[in-house]
Image (cartoon, rainbow over all chains, first blue to last red; front, side):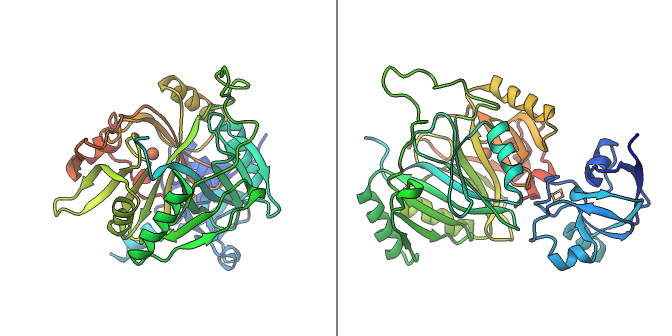
Length: 103
Length: 307
Ligand code: FES
Ligand SMILES: [Fe+2]
């Protein structure tokens, strides 16, 4: 059986599970949840940008326009391109979200 | 010949994060044929019903988006005339010599006010894979996957769309076919044609320069749009919206994303445009129907997600 990890979204207290090896954003959508904004689902548009505050994951290709190499190290990532290896705690870091908080 | 000057979109070069994944998408799902890979690793593809050597160029890069879009013009003389009128209007033009290895004649290029690079060319080589011309069968072998017939148009996002529109309409002979206009008179979206299609390029006003909204491929009919939707579900492809229809241009369409997040469209239909037709205008309060005629509402992702 595939291991399922729990993904917690700090901002809104939402949580859902994600099978090991599946994208966090993809797992969220499949379960009908919407706490992380969905764009291209392919690491290109930056809409699903999050900061992983706790937990381990593997990352797929992400456009450098939205996540610099350094930021990848600091766990600023695209949720559609991370595959959990443990439970994760994440925080939204999309440009749209930032504007909403600053308002 | 009635259509002179710029004939049609010729090619677009896209940046992809992972070439292998991109090839599965463009070759095995959309159904394009790989024509060649050059020494720099760029891959050249074309749809089965296109005569010229290639229409889609893929370049592996760390950032997604569009490098440039090229239009084919009627003759070498027309190419020179365009270079002259662009320069006379103060637009810097660069020239790229012919490159036989890449099947390309000489090109001229310029940077538009929206930050997009455009190229013009008059000649491109053909390959054995081009459509038949003697007692022409429909195709050499039955088209694969989504059966895309051609690269049809791009929708680009940028800040100064008035400036880019001015170059296309005043200097390159394009005609505005349809537009979305805000109450204060600002044009938010413009659809431009260089021939008899409802659009060959479209522009949307957006704060950032040089963005790609989508690259579009023509399918034969609505039934093939459904077939494309079946393929997208079968292979768990990332779908944006559709199948649906646009009020603007009336095309029947699906939007989806390539594995690097560049948006693609496959569509069929759309009206025929004649140069004596008046401009069709949508107001912002009806823009939902303008974009998605069946849903009659905008989808935030469609409006804001670009590469
Ligand atoms: S949804 Fe576009 S980068 Fe994740
Ligand atoms: Fe389109």
